[in-house]
Image: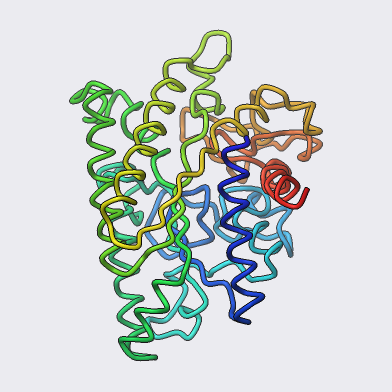
Length: 343
């Protein structure tokens, strides 16, 4: 909890201070999976979609937007607190759209660090795909404002990255996929870390300097994993693997900051606060954290389908479907960051 709020608090203070002093808008580029997606998969032939009821039922206008929750993502809420609009989905923009100068969201449901993660979703933008898309964005920015100004622009921007959940949930932990059979966890996590190191380096080569990587939460406690337990409890082994991944990412980032010129990469450890929210829901105003508000069928994906039944009070549940937090849970996570920051 302290690590997360201190890290993000420092970052937000730095952003707010720079905006106040320079009079310039905050520019953010977002890379991630369904936890941060805002609609890219709506433009793909993908099985990982959320552009149907009941997704978005508590979003402005009560309609689905491609966000994998009943309302806002944490990114939406933080953007609102900063007084800026959340970046639009990359695939919704024309290549030379002026909006690219205010930030872009490349996140895609089903995406992973590894290119074969989420393969059965058919289409999704992997982390490598998202980096290639950012490269195209940078070229478009160059064409608009010139090479020198474009380089300054991407150097000053803030890059939020949240990847890795699908590499476990929709890869290593699926017994019918190659990764779960081909690698031990020690081998798998080393593959993830080495690949992630190459991806951070590629973003740095493209001009990214201020990068924030969000660590994984306790995946063993999400509804899609709990159903694998005969007692419906958190899967301890999965959580231990996640903590090992987070630890290795922290060490990777420390090394990259030493070796990549001007790199300011931050590791945001989200594990403790999410675990506390799940283990002590009543402390945050919730009643249920071991199952989802939407009555999902985990045997066919665990998403909230239009024929699903919803809980009576969505604000009492931590999880919306088998994988994603509710709007209310996202609000608590974002508010705790700001409460600590401005205490």
